[in-house]
Amino acid sequence: MIEPMTITTEELQDQRIIYIRFRGSYAAFRKESRKLVTELFDFATKHQLIVPNDTKVLTIYDDNPFITNEKNLRTSVAMTIPKEAQVIEEGNVCESSISGKFAVGHFELAAKEYGEAWQYMYQEWLFKDKAKARDATPFEMYITEPPKKLSEKSLTDIYIPIL
Image (tube, rainbow, N blue to C red; front, side, top):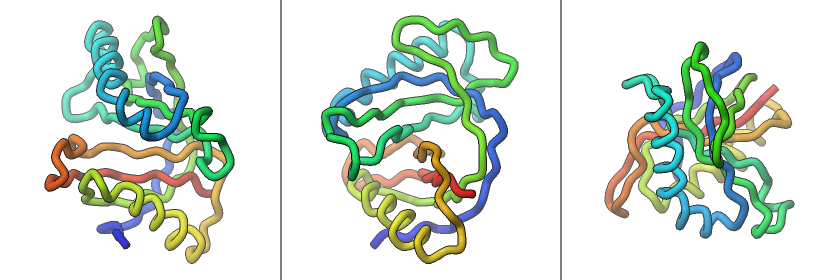
């Protein structure tokens, strides 16, 4: 089983994001994700929302795959934006914010290891720690660009909402 380098706790206060939501299986999402990220980056570039070395890209998992039928799973590609940014939603791009307390697993992952990392955070860490899950959406934050080849690894943080 993949284990994180460390697990920390982080409190987010109204972290603004823009996002594009996808509905369908995780396999279908993976096939569309590059197109969705390109659309999100085009919007952010057009509206000058990208802050070099500060803007982060996320994948938000809006539904539990053990409860929701895979064709109805909602998954969003997202990007952090500055607090003071002016955003007018258009096309598929929406705005929201993320707040609350999170357990953050800091991982170095190859493309095929993401599922194991999520399993570790929920099955190994959450159930054995004193923290209790909170009803909010978990997400991945990409510290470095996700791997394109199976042999490559990247730094990814997995955020689990906790009380």
